[in-house]
Length: 283
Image 1 (tube, rainbow, N blue to C red):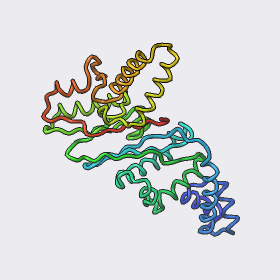
Image 2 (cartoon, helix red, strand yellow):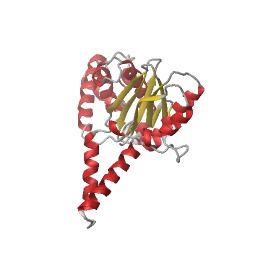
Image 3 (tube, helix red, strand yellow):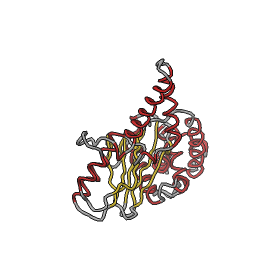
Image 4 (cartoon, rainbow, N blue to C red):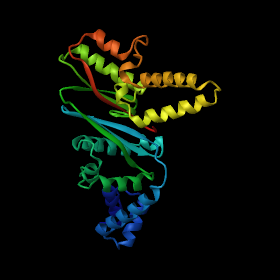
């Protein structure tokens, strides 16, 4: 095998650039297996140097089957790389694996990809090849436990890859187009309004306390009596809870009505919102 053929073979098996392959072959005295190991070690070193940089771009990748729906965030440094064919191919395979392991990131990292290398090993190779920091971000899976999942993707990059992903689980005693339409519209509503919880009592207490602190700081400088400040503060926190809770939000398709009003009007037997999540790149 000529040197050029060896370089070509090495590039195909590792994804490394021409110069790196040529250098590794010289260092290994033409031994391809040793050259692969040299490139792997150099790739780890390159990847380690890049990990201190910011990676706030990327995509949300959605995969689903009959039992569940999963979303995985894969971050990179630039939007240009987020649209790179190699990156997209890599993320799509990651997404399917993520759905198989139910969004268990540690299991995902150790999972084998189609090339028989682990996700961790492929991640290092991809960082070395593309030249940017790439990380696995948020991940979540919603199971269909006597319910049905609906999703909405906004700013789609390709297929099931987007900049914003919403998954919502709805249950009812009916299974028809009326339920499906509501589920799809609800996912779009969540994308637009970004609720924190289904109802106000489900909002995390630390979020409520932080909001109270911000409101109190704002009102302290108003010069109003303490009793008035207390009343205004209570009104503001109640308004915050209402706007942050899915059921009490104004329905985006008909703002004069709340989401709960729409559920009541649909008259679908035992219609309930079971769970939801909304992931957006950069948030």
